[in-house]
Length: 110
Length: 114
Image (tube, rainbow over all chains, first blue to last red; front, side, top):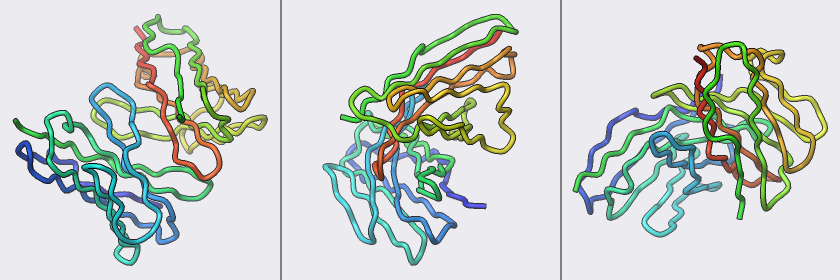
C-alpha cells in the first residue's frame, strides 16, 4: 500500500523563524509531489509543486525533494501567524491520483 | 487560473434526504475530477475518481449506490448522497485537474444530517 507519512505536530515556531515540514513516501515510482495548506474548516490550497530532485523556491516557500531518500520537505521562511494551518504533503501515484499524508499542524506564535 | 467552484457550501437536512453537491471547473476543462471526504481532525480520504463521460471509479469501502457520481461534462461533476444518515455527516471536497497539472480543490461542502 502506498503511504505518505508526516509528523502530525503541532509544530510550534516563533514569528519570523523558519518552519520546516517533512514528509516521507513509500512508492519509489512517484513522480510528482505537492504541498497543500489547509486552514481549519477550509479546503486545501496548493502552495508548491516539485517534480525533480533539489530545491524549488517560491517567495517564502522552498520545497526540497530527495527521491533516493523518498523524502520531500517544505521550508517556510519568515514565518507569520497567518501561516498557521495544517500542511498536507501529497504524492502523485498511479492514474494521477494523489495520496495524502495525515498533515502537519503548524502554529506560528507572535 | 484553475478555479474550482463547489456548491452548496453547507447543507443541514433530515435523515433519509438525498443531497446533491456540484463541482465546477470555472476556467479550465477538467479531464478528471475527484471526490474526497474529511472527518474532523483527519486527513482527506479519496472516495472516487471521475472522468468525463465514463463511470466513476470508487475506492474500496465506498458504496457506489449510496454516493452517486455523474460527470456529464468537462466542467461539471456531481455527487449525490442518497438517503443520507447521520454517519454521512462530513466535509465533502471535490478537486479537478487537467493533463499533468496539480489538482485544485473546491471550497468544500459541510454536510450535517440530523
